[in-house]
Amino acid sequence: MEATTIKLDQKTKRDLDKFKEHKTETYDEVIRKVIYIANTSKDNPGLSQETVRGIEKARERIRKGHFINEQDAKKKLGL
Image 1 (cartoon, rainbow, N blue to C red):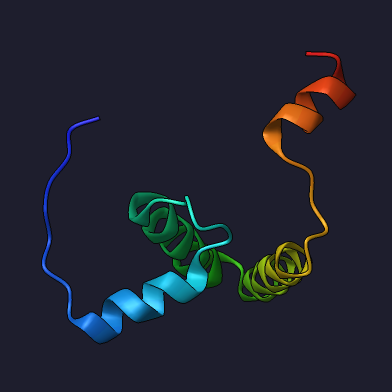
Image 2 (cartoon, one colour):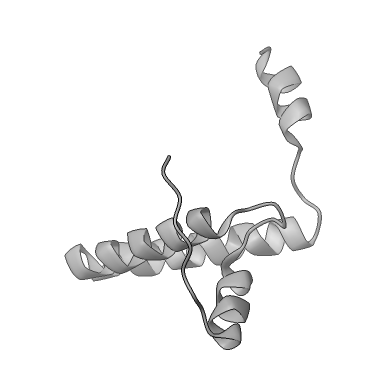
C-alpha cells in the first residue's frame, strides 16, 4: 500500500478516534469504515442505519471487554 500524509484539525482527529473499535485500529481503517458508511447511506439509507447500530453495539461490547483476542479466535477455529 502506498501511504500519504494528510493534515487534520485536532478536533477532526479526536472525532476519528471515537470511531476506533480498538486502540490499534489505524486511521486508514477508520476512514475506510466512515467512507463505507457514507456510501451505504447514499445507496440504502435503512441499511446504513443498521450498520451504524451494529458498529455501536460492537464498540460497546469491546468497551465492556466482551471479545476474544486473535490468538484465542484462531484456537477456537482450529487455525
